Length: 474
Ligand code: HEM
Image 1 (cartoon, rainbow, N blue to C red):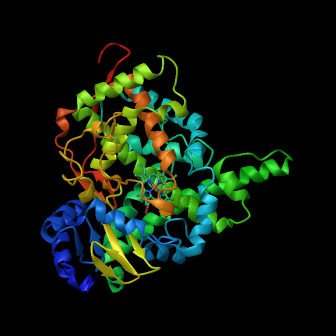
Image 2: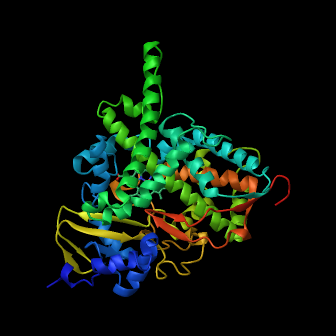
Image 3: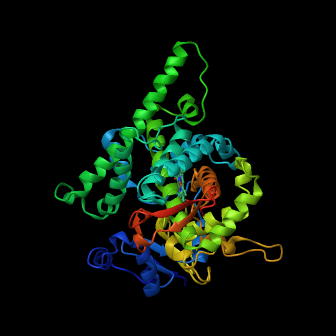
């Protein structure tokens, strides 16, 4: 008789609450994954009654059993906000065939690597402006030290994704940033910072505790920013139509022109795409710069690759930059060590499944402890070391680590829709930055630790030295 859910080691809700509150794991839930794996093994029932999955092989078993319309789990508090304000659901919140129909529309012009390449020119312009901004910041009294890179990279990522989604430049990299932009950045932070509390606390506590109010205010900020930009685009399109001019565009124009998308759907989807596209790439770049400054030998290899693969003075094409092995390995390794989405999940709804020798009936919720999985010594020897080399395959050694050891963009049809855009954006960014600057740690900053605010972020502003390679200074 196979073992079942009842036979799994389990963590009680009280134990979970004790760890989150008294022991302070509420902002370090990724570290809690490692602790609980040590205590309960690779598969156990967690404090939220879901099954926690903590090894690459078990993760593969679950994901190979993914439903036709995969479901990530309880999104009720995200839906609740949208219902409250009358917005449509986007790709994160929608499920079943409605989700599928939405993805069919959203995937076009975005999902395929070929789709992403068409944004190479737009993204390169944003990267060039960012490099210009670094030169500008170095003229301040702090000189080569650039402080609060987290915020600078946030502005970069927002500018980059907005240039694609809204087909327009926002101006986030200019000296004075447009009004509303900083509010939008703070709104994302506010929503994410209160998400876990709203999820865990009972509904009756909403009027008594501040979390729900802050959470709703965060979403209001996100939606009001996105809807304003969409409305502006619609006015522009209308103006051109009134003047009998051609209406051409990339992403938003395509969505607005799509008969299957109502304006309510466009608001819902664009807001979620915008949200997903800012926090993720900006934090991934923050971690990558931090790691490159801590591992100068890796930075040197990367510099050699970027300076030899494309002649000096010529910008790489989007295609070239996606084919640079070390550059790709640097981003992959950085996402392994700091998976910006450290926890994910699936509810297998279609049928019963056997995972790790246990039988689970349909509708079982699985939580993936990605942080613990990608720092597993069995899959990744010297897991705490930044070793991009582990992703370089020579002709003799095929295979490499288990592919499910690190899946930072998720898996299958429900995987990240923006993956190719995010990768291209990060490759172009790192290519140009490495060409211009050598980066070094700022000893004043102290140790940078990670905290989990739904995404994995640094616990303090990153500060680095940017030494100009052109002046031979570096
Ligand atoms: C470093 C950058 C990024 C990382 C690490 C990342 C990671 C992820 C992960 C782990 C998921 C869940 C996938 C799954 O459940 O299998 C996801 C979903 C998603 N991502 Fe990304 N993402 C990044 C950038 C982006 C960008 C730039 C966009 C927008 C253009 C985006 C839009 C989305 C959307 C809309 C979903 C939900 C897809 C669905 O449920 O159908 N992401 N992402």
